[in-house]
Length: 235
Image (cartoon, rainbow, N blue to C red):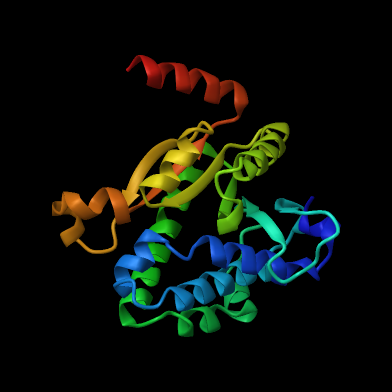
């Protein structure tokens, strides 16, 4: 179901789900030295809430939740997306919806520096993708609660999101944090576009590049995605 169907009361539960799913985020774990996982959870919870408060169309936020439950942690998986650029929030909308609170929630200077670096690179990469491919569905947040991971719920949710995008003829674009996350999206037809590095030194450090770098990925609409997968397998 979508946030539109659940109603605004589900916003907090969805935020909690995404925050908990990002507890071991490779980028923030590296930036904080792994010293404060609970603060990392709180940061990503605020990021998810910001994205949903700024959303112009709640029908592009999807939730999986066990029927009959409404605890703070009852959402099993969440995807927060929007059509880019039509429904993507402006800088003013982000500020009005709480961007400063998100920045202040960063667990230390290293985490703040990492987040600002990522946001700059993400904005430039999305603009370039739009220039080359036209409008697209942008997945800003995607996560499964820790106790539900490995049960196929993330894949179930992703299939629903991709069906929506295919029905509208939109490619799908996202940023995957870490090697495991990027591998999950590749299994669903996403292809790597570019690597976003937080500090120049990472480029020369192969031991950190694969684990901690964020990879911009995209999936074409269904029939094009199938052809790209065949070409990729043959390469």
